[in-house]
Image 1 (cartoon, rainbow over the protein chains, first blue to last red):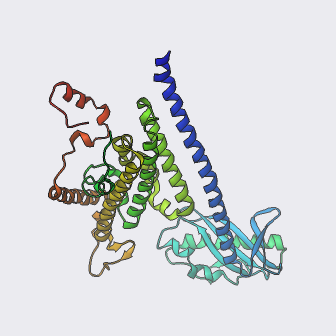
Image 2 (tube, each protein chain N blue to C red):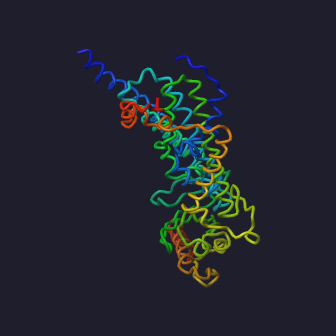
Image 3 (cartoon, chains in turn purple, yellow):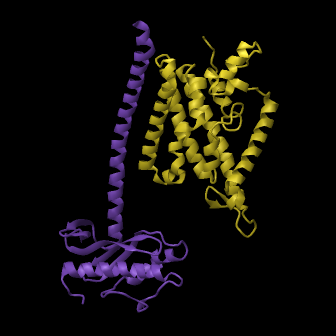
Length: 179
Length: 233
């Protein structure tokens, strides 16, 4: 009986204890880091939203529109809306974030993620191209007021589509003044 | 077994005489894979060193507690636990390093250096020397990775730590250095250099003693039986 205990039960028990302790430590670390990562993601999203809607300091959700958030400035005055739009780019999905101010004009556009061709399509995701959308009141049209990127037509059109979708949603929320 | 420990010796052996990568030839996989840039090399070295020290400390403190029959699963559980904790912390606080190292961060679990040192040293020696051994081996690993990383990055891209040191106008980067073949070239050269330095310091013949599987090796048992005498423990 003693040798069964020594040869089988004791090693198994010890291995069990070791695995148990390691698992507890892992669970605790995972909880802690999950929280850290979540807070960081929230902070980053807030910063990006602020970067496309000038004056906004905080955001609230909008009923019925899961892509949109309503922004207010420090005195709690309306600052506008920020829309997160997903479109199909040339090589995959593109996520754009569009801020439309209280005056109905596009305040800023930024691209959150994309997989466009580096050096070509990716130019449509950069500041020089995106700055053209600022001040837009009506939907953009390729070639009219918006210069396309040479050799990156599809990527450029994708960005235009994203901005227009944001404008459409704004009209639907704020009620048809832009047409 | 009251061995007299020289902590300085336990630390420095990991750097030149028994460098895990260039002399013991352990951990070659991450060495070749992450040394395309100096920064990645340092990141990997630091992460592996952290795991190595922690696992050596824990395994050494439990060495009388862990029965021989389950020692390998026990060591692996402990090592995997530490690697995962290091990975979670890096993901949370240094996400760029996490992206740069990619799959090779979790692969530290099977980095032979860690299991090797656990078997060869931590399971037979007290806590403080084991910790120092881990530190020395880790620093040696990082140093070897850093050398490889600097050479490959400099010749393969003209950069050092991401900064363009040799502009394209004077030096056309030799792309093969960033490819696996180039990695092997540089690795071979470094082993040769290390061998030479070892020779000048008085070469040690590791033979079976340096192998992590020495304890349960059938070939060593044979040698003992046929009375050829083994250099193994």
